[in-house]
Image (cartoon, rainbow, N blue to C red):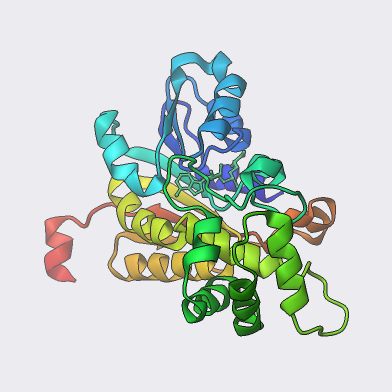
Length: 295
Ligand SMILES: C[S@@+](CC[C@H](N)C(=O)[O-])C[C@H]1O[C@@H](n2cnc3c(N)ncnc32)[C@H](O)[C@@H]1O
């Protein structure tokens, strides 16, 4: 399983300091924490509800685990505030949790009737309803095309603008389904890409990832491992490009020559794993002054 492989790549040392940047419901975090003796695990998530579940699940580890409600783009500040030593491993398992997807009132899924919300952090200002009801038609079409790779983006944007106001998941799903051109048998629900694009926009997921990729390396110890699991081609591209750039600058060594995908068996038992992609890098020792001069 990809989750087990991710843990192997982290190569957990019992006395090390680790950050689970997306602690979610604590699945990975339990596995990391149970391998620690004197070490510490810092778990971040922007979702207060997820942290509550994780806190209960991790309570037996006592002070070995510290959970913080924070955006992972703030990893540098959190490390400073907690006075962390250089970190031996960072795990980021991007995207949404099953709790978010399966809770109707959070509005992430067209499978349940609920308000058009989609905020991972319910303190943030903008909901999916705000975007759907207030964005100009061409801008909305661009957003659906860019973030959801939705080929019918213009037709859908036009239908959304005509149907405003749209305040519920069912209403949006019906409007989108009516606007799609039918292309034979579709594997995905007609509203899948629209919902995905809105979720990424509401939560500024690409901006967050960009800042995380920029800031995390400075928090890693030399030899520290960095494992990123992504579920969207735009995210994976960002990770791949940034790893490549940092490797060319001598900051990281990329350990996964090719992206790692789940096995067919894993996808069959867990369809949500189908789009998962994992990349792993290791922080390099800073070059000694003599080496720098020689190179
Ligand atoms: C796929 S789930 C993680 C599941 C977790 N690995 C587990 O084993 O339960 C992704 C989590 O990342 C959180 N998340 C997504 N973007 C975030 C960000 N920018 N900052 C902090 N947390 C974020 C979500 O709220 C969600 O709980």
